[in-house]
Image (cartoon, rainbow, N blue to C red; front, side, top):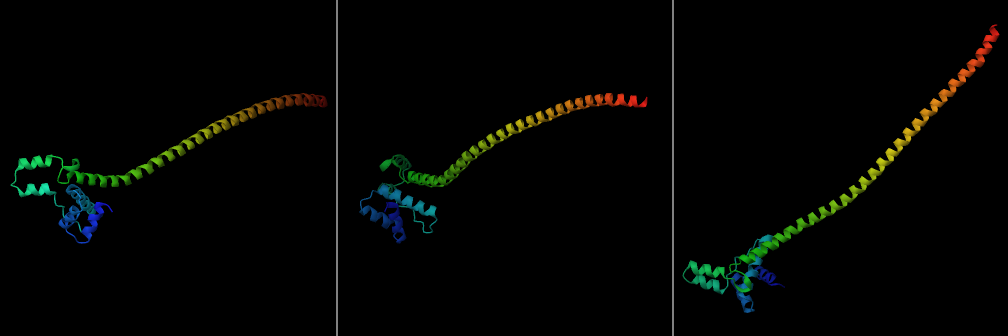
Length: 188
């Protein structure tokens, strides 16, 4: 069980923050780790919507010493500008930023998944559209070929009709000559 889960479990058992901090310090956990874990547990409860949000954790021993002394703005500014254990500034600001980044990352994962599915859809759609475009181009070529073939057939049919018309005209002329000569003879 992690430290954050342990703190949450202790809080659910009804222990106060002071009792939780004391129990963890007795186990040898550093005040900074306790403070960070308490802040993360508080934020985790706030994010998950639990009603029983723990009070803010007590600051480590150095922070309590400063609050016990007379207020000196210069000394306090120097204290907060110095990094504490592990490179974090005291007051939990860095911890809150880390937790906020975690929450942001979790929220962004949903958006990232949606974007990935949209990119996948886009890729598939592009491939299908490309295939449809290729098919349409082939169909256009086939229609052009059919159109040319039809025009050739109609043209050859027209030429065939012209030839047939010429042959019929020649036959009529021959028939007139043959029939015309007989009708002249029978009238005489």
